[in-house]
Length: 340
Image (spheres, rainbow, N blue to C red):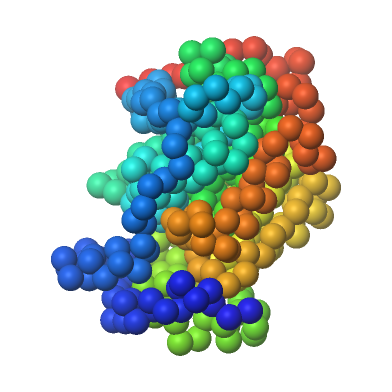
């Protein structure tokens, strides 16, 4: 379908803008980008408290979002990881803060939004992934301290954050025989080398401004995160390379106008082949990064409703009644070994 009117009417603001990874924007370019993103207005209300989670590389910044007022706590928890090409982003960005608030508003669940060390100044894989693994495991093992309740624990992320969320699930599956109740991957970047786009997607993306194109920039961005050529990636750095057997129930949300859509589509197919309970939703009329858009905009609202459906009590895709799935022979408490 055509690009949503709220986006199409503002594409002119992105003309001649470089991509974020191409280098810093000028003040005028930043103003145009902000006007395009249109993040004005009041986000959904939530009670917010900071959290410093101990990790092997030092504390991992996080925030706990919970319902305001007399709304009953559901006991459910959703650990959320923002994107940003492994190089950008923080807990204040809309994809982190607004998404957490929207999920709280729609589900009544508690959301723990997690930050991580970025792949800058010599930091590379596995450090950002270590932060997410440590944060997810800590929330799992310290539900009382985190104030999240003891209901099902799910995890999700967007773009590079989806890569980190999936990689963390795989690490904890392999190292501790533990799985979350559900996984949500929004416009995920889970390949070392992107699958080829379909002719249909190539046609859709033709003519869009460079600022929203990712096809020719993905390789250098992933190599920067990996700290080496794509051929050196393993299944934790690029989850599409992993053995996906036993992966938990998963929802994949792909943007219709997105150079990374083949990654999400191929990962959905690989999960299905591996026997996972997986559903893929094509969010039509929108671009990569749609969770940074206002939750009142129809494509973003639809995506948030899909997320809420799979994080709400009674969802048919929920994996078990507890906070996750654990092999009873696995050790009960993990140790975090600080970096030297």
